[in-house]
Length: 281
Image 1 (cartoon, helix red, strand yellow):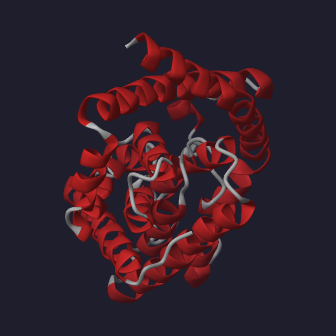
Image 2: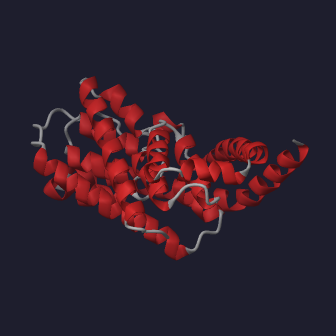
């Protein structure tokens, strides 16, 4: 146990500088462009899914929550909301950067997410009629839901880094302990026993309405336990607090559940298809 704890502490400590620098950039982008991005999506019209898919890859704290509020206020379409949710990276990007993943791999993952997000969003707008615009919900910046307010970018980035580092440490300890007790081969065989098993499990984990899901999924992929398709399934479904925000602000709870089910279906189908096609980065 001491060996596992020591190894996990060292592994997490090596990631801290990269995590902090990544979150510092993310905080700058959010404070500089967060509200402008929301207004841009609202004015995009039929090109909303394209704009939402491109903006969603910027891992801004609370951005998916802002999109949920814009949809509840009927400022954006279902397709635009779906595109934002599918392209949102949540904590994926900081983890990939902190693990020093090659830039080509990172850009490839982001590119695939954007293509799937835009295609699914446009298809949703074609299938489902655009609902009439109602009075928009005020103050949709989303900062109140991620506690990033205060204006100090350095402290906000430090809070994010500390929060993720604690979870990452606990998750790393759990993974190393599980591998030590059960054996890495056994866990790999369990997830690889069926091509769809890892995809289904990752997609369900992605529904967890916080950063834990994307951190776990990305880490398992980087450790070679999850396939590329399984990782993509989980990250497509992962919206941070977006789904939680949607359930809170949308008066139609059945609609919120339907959107969650649609999101899950897209993640499973696309993740499974990527594995069947042998796509890997």
